[in-house]
Length: 221
Image (cartoon, rainbow, N blue to C red):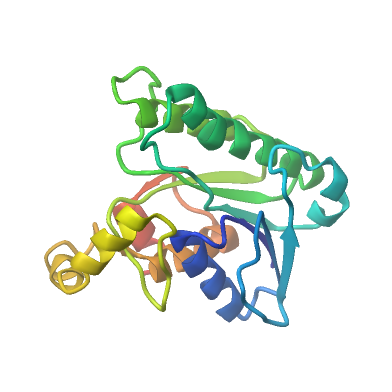
């Protein structure tokens, strides 16, 4: 498989990239972002692109791909709805529309979030926007679209959040994660399991488009 990853420098993206590089059936991994991942691997090609709202200049690099794992997103903290919508709706839709036009047989996997509002009409701003993003992605002419809605995620193998508040949270709860996973084995995800589940749906699909934590875990069992 030939895979493109958006957001490979974020916590989830780091884990997804690791699993892609380890997978025997993945022959090429292309990352797109404003900065490099700092990793070096024979399979890995990094495309540093400053303007993630315009792919005209790099369209030739975005063809002949089998799957896209879109792990890029911004926290709602301190953002207006318009600002949050630009980063978490407009940006992924622009990328997805470009990829759909260039790769009609692509599987597109989007990292959303637990609690996303598919009705787009609830009181919680981020959930409404994510719901709109999910709904618009499902309308695009890909081979398949899968929407991952993780809740609590345990970072593994050195994956780190770029958000200081989240890094503090993960540091504080590091010793608690094994207990949480023992008590709630189907609800707690890891960066490793998310990456493996994305590869699974890219290979063989899934029974439904919207995958909650339990469904994501089931993909790799």
